[in-house]
Length: 251
Length: 308
Image 1 (cartoon, each protein chain N blue to C red):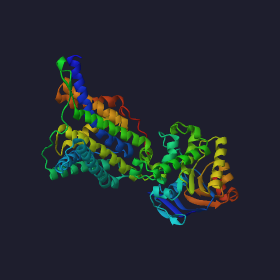
Image 2 (spheres, one colour):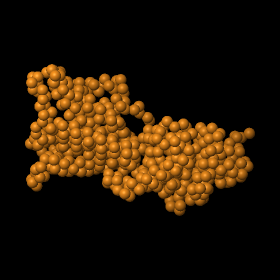
Image 3 (cartoon, one colour):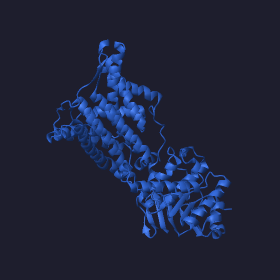
Image 4 (cartoon, chains in turn green, blue):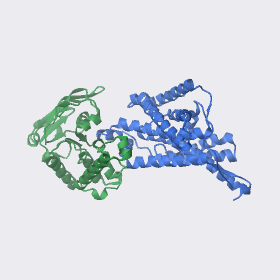
């Protein structure tokens, strides 16, 4: 589904990412891990079109996407979250989910002005999808609250729901468990697995919570100081000498 | 009612008339600021162009034999909105979009340039003397004559109120209910995120310019009819006043622009009535200073959140 080859990202004299390569297959959960400042988020930013990478190639479903406008990339079926929650805070919970479906709906100005039957039908579908996902992430009762007033864990879940209403093929989560308590982390764990199983999507994950990563990943990419350090299944990574060294430092 | 009270009522009516027109123009400033954080200094020129277009349209329609006033005005309004929207769209496309993503000051300078270009374009094409339009909406109500001072509410003033009210109501509904309005709010809050969710932000930004220009066109027609004259330089002072109204109400906030316009218009007419006409700008800009001292974000503005 996603092939990243020899990815390079240079900021002035700083080579933040150098030669990172990995694949994400269909219905797979792939985690990117590494010490702080290793360049994990930079890799994410390159893939999602936030940055135009200075070298290498990124293919999504066989199509090269590096350097394309971010809204185009997202329309191909790739959607992401950020380390810190970025909801539309002064809009209601349900509006957050409706606005994310903007591109699915006929947005012709006159269609909206005259409320054509086609427009109404699409609006209705958008609302149904929003309600479906609100139920799924347990936020239906908060549908008309302002998103900014939700509790932190709820905001995290809303963010994932907002990604899912866009019907992505690849979901990219940047530290989704950051700031969650162990119970919420476990729920998140189940949610991510169910997204993969029930909706046939792939997930690319940046995460520090090792129990989450080890538990759900099909494969793990380890990055250290911008360079790829290891690539393998959770078991392989757990026993990889270079990874242990990078995480624990030289003894 | 006593004579002085009637005098006050008259000034209030005059002030609210001007104020609602300021508010219509102010919305164009505030919406653009709310979305891309820039001041569109060429917006006043869009208003000026709309006045010219209205005059031309009315003259043209009358030549075609349309003399029934409501139809004439509605057709002129449609023409003015269509042309002004095209100008608004084109200005953004030509002068601002290519500069987006750079330093915030660059589009600002470009806006000032655009304002000069449009002003001179009209001055060259239409001559830089006043053009006049005969008074079309005549008459009104007079009351209070037996108390010594006659209050007049002209049909023209009433039309300005009513049309402004309708335009504001449509805008409010559009922003809060429609899909495009929802997208506008999302883009205003977090453009990058909106982009990542697949919203074509460039289209939303264009839409904002078009809406702002359409409202300026409404103001252009109404004030054109009210004053009966226009020249290529009316955009500057009208733009400055409307911008002041937008800042007063809290730039970025649509209800703020409405409120700011009304306050500005009223304070101007009150100053002109009770102090001196020469002092009206002093008082209205002084008011701006005082309000900003106590509420730096304007009356209804929210504290600015750093956009990433």
